[in-house]
Picture 1: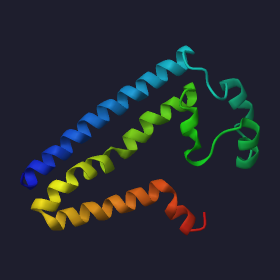
Picture 2 (picture 1 turned 90 degrees about the horizontal axis):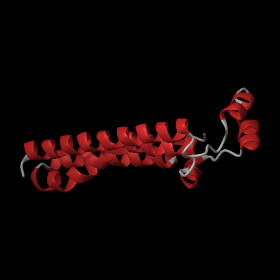
Picture 3 (picture 1 turned 90 degrees about the vertical axis):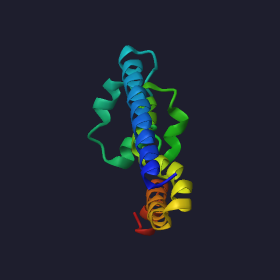
Picture 4 (picture 1 turned 60 degrees about the vertical axis):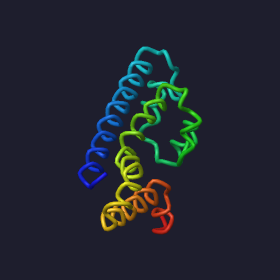
Length: 134
């Protein structure tokens, strides 16, 4: 497969991933609004806590931090995160899928894609935040 084929593969993955993410977002909205999935934090409670400083909000709402939200995807207000994460991750997933093809046919492009993946995964993991002291 030549570089053009890798670009088409990348585009197909972007298209499919975006459609799946948008479907998850729509399903999450419907589940949350309809009450099918009970929220972790009811909207009326959220309205009372919204103006608190972060640490007080986290303590009062028992809200997760970091990747701990994954344990709450059965809740209406956290199920939406699945679609958001997929939407934010689809470029990295498409690069990951395309990388072996680029490595065989366009090594310079493969190197650029690999470097982009390293930056994206470091950012998503929180590594860059911890290095910066945040």
